[in-house]
Length: 146
Image (cartoon, rainbow, N blue to C red):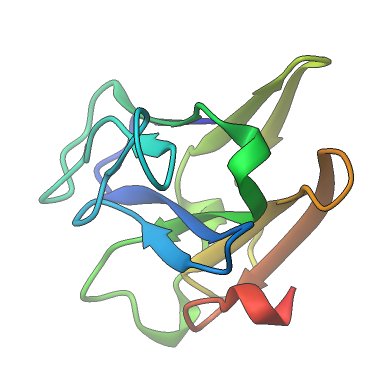
């Protein structure tokens, strides 16, 4: 999964996960994970820090999908201002999801107030499948709610 944007804002990718052994966690800019060991999810960079414009790209990669039960993929607007009317339509962000079946481009264009865009959920109980969520929230999402 890749998050792209150019405007002067700090957007962030997040992955809320549950492993098949029941361990839950959260991959984001302060806890980037590892591909070669638990949780087998890795965030490569924290771009746009300080609301810097330019070619901002963050990549989230999974290496051992067989160890994961579920992963909630989320984008966040990291800003201390903007208030209750903050929304993704103000910026030019997009998320590109790449799977073995190809790519899906998800433009972050919602004008619904909220700083959290819940994009999709990977479910992997029997076999892996991506579920489209496409929901804007004001508060940090919880994996258990999806």
